[in-house]
Length: 153
Image 1 (cartoon, helix red, strand yellow):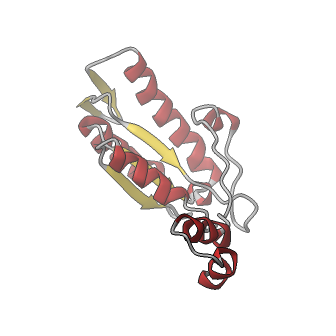
Image 2 (cartoon, one colour; image 1 turned 180 degrees about the horizontal axis):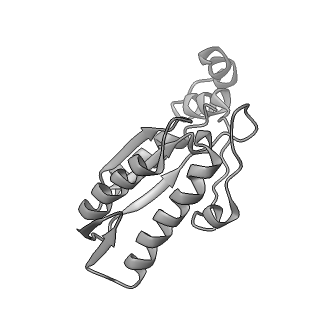
């Protein structure tokens, strides 16, 4: 927690001029709501960032995996349209799904292998703010940059 996972995803989308919709997941989320998200985002080519994704119930996660796989396969085939969750939708190839997780917390599920295979893992850690401050102070020519960087935190 606190490593900037969601902010990094949002900043990447911003740098690439992609709309990024962030949604905080909970254990009350079902596959019907997720299907609606995927329909809208896949048809307009936006990115979805599902924060705390592993808070969703394991039964729902397996269905979500099938939904994501269906859309990804259609995009790989370069299909213009897809029949998805009872609707015919047009596909925009800019669509992307990102998830953030904090494993090891109470009430969190491990992702099913079929769902894990759809994502590329990126490990993040809390940055050393004192070191970042020290380097910034050194860059500006401060003589006591180390001490100033430590005080900044």
